[in-house]
Length: 135
Image 1 (tube, one colour):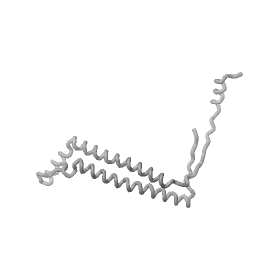
Image 2 (cartoon, helix red, strand yellow):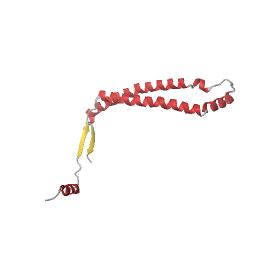
Image 3 (cartoon, helix red, strand yellow):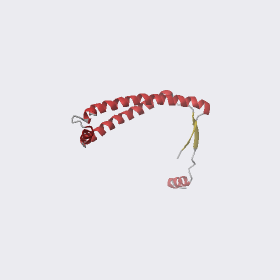
Image 4 (cartoon, helix red, strand yellow):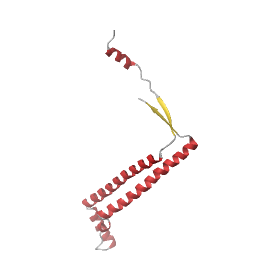
């Protein structure tokens, strides 16, 4: 009579058969695509605003704006020229926020349009063939 360890050893020596499954993607749910594209674009919008504000802070703390002011004062011969009056932190933050909101609207619409176009094209082509295996 063999022990449990010997039985397990015999089982592990056999090669495991890999099962392959081929499926067709024939439909994308419209509202799922809209929700996913909306959440993705909101995330990218938040990242966009934060990165723009961080870049402004880095440029301000490294005195890049002062160097640009000095260079442009020499070129334009204007003593009262100031870059930070135009590119202040609130202006940069507001501009970034507006662009992020527009990106959310456009990106969500593009996600919806993509889902609709895929669902229409599936009727012609039959769908996307996808293969899966278990390891």
